[in-house]
Amino acid sequence: LQTDISSADAVYACALCLNKETRAQLAQKVRECRPGTPLITVGWDPRRDWLEPVDSFSAGFSWGSANVYLYKIRPCESTSISSEPQ
Image (cartoon, helix red, strand yellow):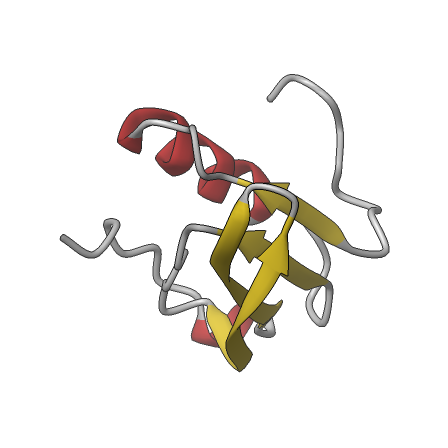
C-alpha cells in the first residue's frame, strides 16, 4: 500500500484473505489512479460512488470458485468517497 499506483494501466486484487481495514486502505489507494483505470477484484465487491460497475461473475480458481468484480474509476466530478458497504 506504499507503492505509487497512480499511473497504473489496471489494478488487480485477489482480496479473499484481506480484512476490512486492509480493503478500505486498498480502496483509498486505488482512488489515486486515473479516471478510466480498470479495477478487477476477486472475493471483494469494492463498491464506491467513484467506481463505475462494469461486470461481475463467478469464476473457477485452483481453490474453487469466487466472485470477480470489474469496475472502472469515474471522472473526478463524481467522486465522493463512501465507506465500504456492510
